[in-house]
Every structure is written in structure tokens, then in C-alpha cells.
Image 1 (cartoon, rainbow, N blue to C red):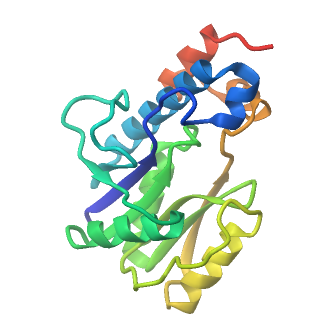
Image 2: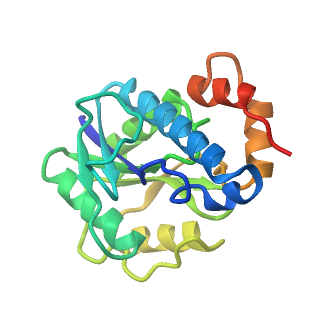
Length: 213
């Protein structure tokens, strides 16, 4: 089954991305981190069989540090739920299933994306939790209007509320392995300690060069 994977990201520009991280390592360094993680996430998605990657961005004309010819869709306006729902519904007009993912967890492997695709062959939805209570991946085979309306975004209850909403709409999700987002300096240090050779190569190379207090 072909799946469109929507990679949600802002253009990796200083002061516009990773602002919490930027308060400790500087806005320029934080933007470089965001760019490297975006590249690694996009390349992992692109290498996953049966997956068509699409960049879901706030500015399709901006430089995201990706190769030429990347399909880029405008997220449009509204809160995160409205934007994710809009992109999912658009993708579902072109493919039997769609997955929305973030670029803050570059350690997510191709195996995990493959698991998401396989799970969507048997279940109506998939959901990948982050340790802070959010989610890094949400996949569906259908997206009713209002599916993600009025959810508590960026809260410890986000994953739980989203799961309940999916179940309420008859979309009981398969659960993917838990991961963590890189938002703070401690997250970045943890990521650096966990990266294995060949894993998230752009982020790994940057972290070997990057210095922080």
C-alpha cells in the first residue's frame, strides 16, 4: 500500500526554529541543528519502501536545505490540528493512507517508518508517542472533518487526547515505539550520546563540530 508521508517543518532559519534550544546554543547553531535533523528525517522517509515524502511547510518557496525537486505543500493557517488535518486530507485524495511526522526526532529509523506502513495495512491509524506526551507520527487511512479539532497541543496530554479522539472516530491506532523530541540542550546532548555510526548522518556530523557551553 502506497503511503504519503508528510514531513512538517518550518524553514530552518535563525530565530524561527528551535527557539528554546537557541537560548542556550545561539539562534544560528539551533537553525543548523534544525536543518540537519530535517535532512536526516527526510532521507529516512525517502528510503522507506512504498512511501512518498512530502514537505508540509509554512513556506514552500523557502530554502529548507533539501535537494531540488522536493514536493512541498503549504500547511496553511490555523492551529496545529487544523494544519495537520488539512495536509492529511489532501494526501488522502492521492494515496490510500497518509502519515504526518515531525522533524524533531531524527533517531526514528527506517524500520519504524516501515512498521508504520505495515501497521496501516491492518489498522485504520498509527500513533507514535514522544516522551513529553506529544507524538512524532500520526497516520490514518481516513480523516473525518474535525478529527484533530480543539486538542491540547504541546501539552503532556497531547498523545493521550489524540489517541482518544482517534478511537472515538473508529480509528483505533497501532502504537509505534516511543521516542523523544530534541527541544532543549539536554535533549541534544542525549541525542549525541545515543547516535550510532551511520545513524542520522547529517545531525551526527554537525554535533561533532558544534560547540556549546
